[in-house]
Each structure stands twice: as C-alpha cells, then as structure tokens.
Image (cartoon, rainbow, N blue to C red):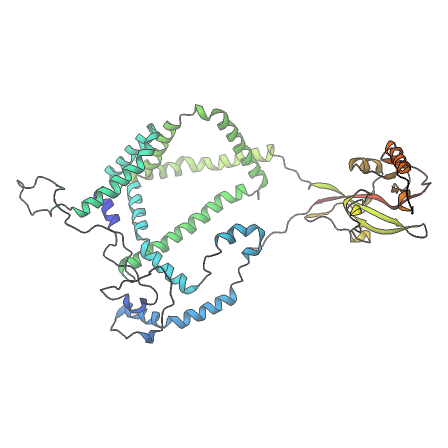
Length: 496
C-alpha cells in the first residue's frame, strides 16, 4: 500500500509550475525555472522579438517558434470570435437570473485565457489519471491479493455499515500520512547491510529525504504529452458513453414511443409502491454484499470470458422472445388516447347604447365588462377586437369547430361569475343588460333620507333580473356570450 500511495503523492514531483504567459515562450525550456509571483493570473504573452533567440532543435524548437509568433494571431482570432459569438444575453432572461448572479464576476471567453488555463489544467490532471489507472488495475484482478483485500474491506462495510464513518479516516491515515512519513524517513537501500545487520525498517532518527509534494508537470515534457493523451482518450470515452446512454435511455423515457414509455412508467410506479410497503423487509446488507462481489468478480478475466460465452449461447436466443412478449403485452393492454384534448373558449359581444337610443356594435372582449368589474369601476374602456374574424385561438391551441355558437344559457354564466346589477334575457338573443341607475342622470342636491330608503328597497330586490320583451329603461351596455371549441395543436419538431 505504501508504494502505491507514495507513488501517487510523489507523482511528477521533479517538475515545476508552468510559467505565466509572459514568460512561457523561452523560460519553459530552461533547467532552472523562475518563480512567478502570481502564477494563476492569465496574461497576454509579449511579442517574440522581446526575448533573445536561443538554440533549440526538434519538436521543442518548432513549438517555441510557433509560440513566439502566436501573439498577433491570438488577437486576430479574438476579434473574429467577438464578431461570430453572439452577445451574452443570459442576464436579460428571467429564467437565468441565478446563472447571471453566479457568473457576474466571471471573465468572458478569451482564447488566450482559455489556452493558458488548459495548459495549467493539463499540467495538474496527471494525478487523476494515475488514480484512475490504479483503480482499473485493482478491479481487473491485476493482482489478486489487492482485489481480495478490497473485497474484504467491502464485506466488513456491508456487514457493519457504521464502518463507513471510519473508512475516510483510515484512508487518510494509511493513504496520506503513512506514505508521507515513509517518504521523509526512507528505508536503507537493499544490499547495503548484511543479513545479520538487516533487522527491518526503523523510523528512528531525523528526516533523511525531502517531503513528497504533488507538483504540476513541466510543459512540453513527456508527462505533459502523456496527460494530453489521457485527456483525449477520456473525452472520447465520455462521448461514447454519453451517446450509448442516450441511445438506450432516451427512446424509452421521452415518450417518443408513448406505449413503451407508458408501460415503463407503470412498472416504475408499481415498483415505487412496492418499495414503500416492503423496503424494511428486504435484507439490504446481504444484497449489497452479494452484488458487490458479483460485480467485482465479473471483472476477472476467466469469469468475463465464461459470461461472454454463456450470453451468446443462452441469453441472446431468449432476448428476442422476451422483446416479442413485451411488445405484444404493450399492444394489448396499454390503451392511449387517440383524439386530442379539447376545451371550450368564450368571447363576449359588447354593444353600447348610442345617444339616439339605438344599440350599436362595440367590440368582442374576453370579459363581460359588467357594472362591478374592475375596468368598469376604474373607468377604463373595454379591450378586445371589432370583428369576429379577428378573434384568435389561445396559444398552442387551434379551432376544432368552424363557427361560434351563441350560449343560450345566459342565466348560468351570470350566476357562475356572481355578476350583479344586470338584467338577463332567457329567450330571444340572450342579451344581458345593465340595470338602469337613476342616480347617474340626476343633478342638484339629493335628500340623504330619501336616498337611504331607495338603497334599502333596491337591496331587497335580486341582484339580477330576467326579461323577455326588453321593455323598460336599461343601462348603457349589454353583452352576450359566444362559445367555440378548441383542440391542442401538435408542436412542430425542433431542428437539431
């Protein structure tokens, strides 16, 4: 364990911090690197003529020459990208307010900063790739003793889950502190002592070696290009894994095949209900123990070959039968709605009394503009359109009928809206009139006692009245309700 962890901690420790952009074209090849007061601050590299030429050969001299003349090219590319890339309008969208606040002080895209940050990242990512390689070797049974040790620790954790609290501390002690101490107090080289004198490792005495540190690799070194190779392969692995997951999961979860997605939704709902009731009865420790051993065991070369042969001989012939049975069950038992959703929409035809005593068409409004409505009390004009043909269906809906129909149940929509101060026609054209208010036409001094008696008398009458012949004086507005059915409109496919 000490060799494994000490090698990770001391990985690339012989290389120095990569230089900042203003020192990079020539200082990157010297054996004695200069200290950078602020290595994390991206700076624009100076022109190549500002530094004296040096004798270089091979790949390094070619890359140094390119770096020396890249300043003008970087500026030109930045100007081009500023014209091509659209302006950042995330802050103007209400849905992206959190994103805008979080990135308010973050720098915008800059090709020089991007290149500098990539070099810094590539110089430091080597320890992650080394850890990844060690884990792959551990799970692939490269050394059976190491893999069995891992399974033993996993078994103890499964049998006693409280050991998870001890596991991070143990990893810190045995994976960090002990290897760091062994690096400061190394054992004597083999063969320097006789068999009688060699009694084993002894930690006694002062430190004999410098402390192990993790340092970024030097640019253009072998480890730097090895990190670029691993990063390239890692990006390819991620892309392939992402595409496989999308190809496997998205078609059955995005309801492109609605019957299949509905069946899967039903199975998941049943599983959630079952787990809610019986989760406490399942032996989770035993399941995790057997599952972990099975997963790690399948990584053994002999077991993986046996599983591959078994799948070809026994499982693949049964896969088609299982798929056929599932498709038949879905086709017979999953019933989907074939007709689109429909709703009833309304529009109110408003008419106003002219000074000549005749009703004149005013407009078609989505609200009845009754005497106690908010726009009416505020003195606002009704809103709508002058012609029936200009009435549009709601967004994401379309008309399912060709014509509007007059609502003959005028009394019902008046009661549903709790509209007061109106007179309702139950026959004929089904107009709903404003009740005439005498106070609007009176002038002069009013007697409070008389007015109070009239208010009590009017309060004893119903809030709306029914009329058949339209006799008597009425208010300045009348309206009637038209209805029409709409259906959901299929969304147009979004191009890739």
